[in-house]
Image (tube, rainbow, N blue to C red; front, side, top):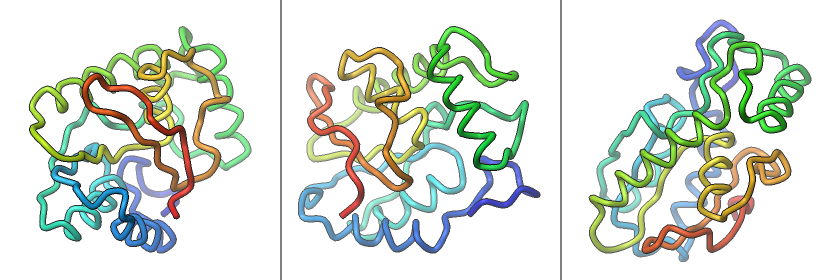
Amino acid sequence: MIDPAVPVPRWHLAPEGIARMRRLAGDPRIASLSAVWASDETKAIEAAGILAAAFGLPVQVHPGLAEMDRSSTGYRPRQEFERLADAFFARPEDSVQGWERAVDAQRRVVAAATEILAGHGEGDIALVGHGGTGTLLMCAWAGLPIARAHDQPAPGCTWRFTLRPPRVAEAWQPVP
């Protein structure tokens, strides 16, 4: 839930996000879920907890799945945030007002996901993260350039990937 008085990584899942995750937990496409990983940000842990609980699984946390570091600017009103995010994706080699560079965030999230998958056994796995770094990971595994055109179309979307090798099987889709 957006709260300008709270650091962005400590925001909680909004009621709509809770409802969305409950719907996702009932999606038959994830019936063989065997592991749930989250970034170390509050919203991701809460969202992962809803999924994990539905399957009797623990939530495992990897800080490398975190959203791009934008602590230099902190909370920004929606219109300004969107302008900054546009620049983040348009100029991936540059730091936008002190934000983590997109190329660095992409390297980080790809390394984290690769590490997690290397230790994963059988069954499906959920990586619960964030729109920005989720897009960067999806771009990497799809062989696409970093671009806002590949960003999630709305909050609360998922994308699917194959495990071996990691490859995008379905681009961003709203949670059913």
